[in-house]
Every structure is written in structure tokens, then in C-alpha cells.
Length: 55
Image 1: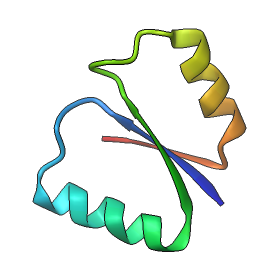
Image 2: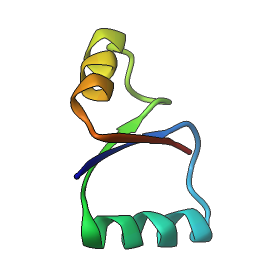
Image 3: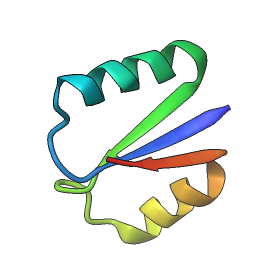
Image 4: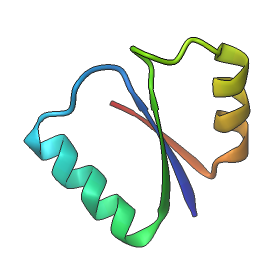
């Protein structure tokens, strides 16, 4: 399963721990919304992944 993580702010320790646990079982793609501005590419990634998590 491919999981897309949309990161709106810097993750705290518990967020990093959860993300590390998800990465052990699934393919994870990350998009830092504070840096990424290509919204068409973001929509494409959302559509192509099995699950999306917003942080």
C-alpha cells in the first residue's frame, strides 16, 4: 500500500515515531506543504496513492 503524507508543519517526536512505524509496513511518499507549491502535482500524488494522511 502506498501512503502519502502531507506535512503542514514540522513533526514532533510522536509524529516522527508514527511515521516511522508506517514506513516499516508501507511505501510512504511525503510532501512538505510549506515548500511544495505545484498543486497539480500534489493532486496527482493524492489520486495515485492508496491512503492520504495530513499532519
